[in-house]
Amino acid sequence: MRNFIIGLSVLFLSLSGIITFKALEIPAEDTRYQNNLKVVKSKDLSPKSEDVSGQLAKEQAANRALVEKLQATIATLEDKLSNKIEETQANVETERSKKTARVLAVFGDGAFRTGQVVINKGLMNAVKESVRDILASPDYRVIIEGHTDNMPIKLSSGKQYRDNLDLSFLRAKAIANILVKYGISRERISVIGYGDTRPIASNETNEGRAKNRRVEVKLIPEDKEF
Image: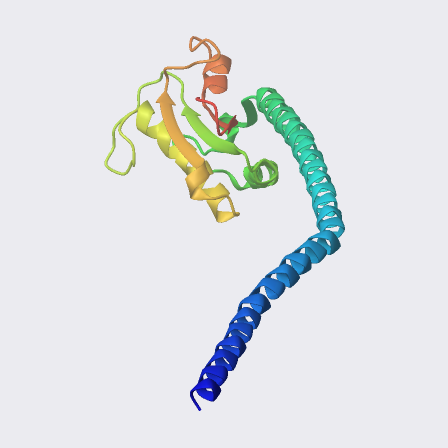
């Protein structure tokens, strides 16, 4: 009986050893399998990785080339735009330099009734001609200057003016009012009365004094002083 128990014990121990060995052997085999799998996977994926890397490098190179091309195009366009701006500015300055002040019309002694600021009806057509010229010159201001001879004004209760300075201003203003009536903006018009301070002829003769009694309509470029 004792021998039988000992025999079973030996058999049990033997079986336990075998089972333990097998248990220890399986992971070893699995580890080898996993290592082999990694090697296989590494071998299988290596060419593909190289292909992907190569393709990516090509795309990056193409993108860099495209960026360089776009930068060159932008630089060229900037140069052309800069040159065009300079050319345009030069043309503008040239056009500005061409603009000069000019006398548009002179309404002489016959334009007004003697000693009055009322314009004669016969001169209305001449004033209308000035309106057309002014409307055709939108970049010009309108300066209306009144002038008289040096003959003193005789004061009277019925007169609107006290001296030649007043008379010259009121006559210039009368012309300005007509221009406004026919469509010229009041903001474009400046009225000045010089009296007898700017004669164009001698005041010693009737002919000279008649020339000095006048209203001048001038066009002045907006960017120039008068």
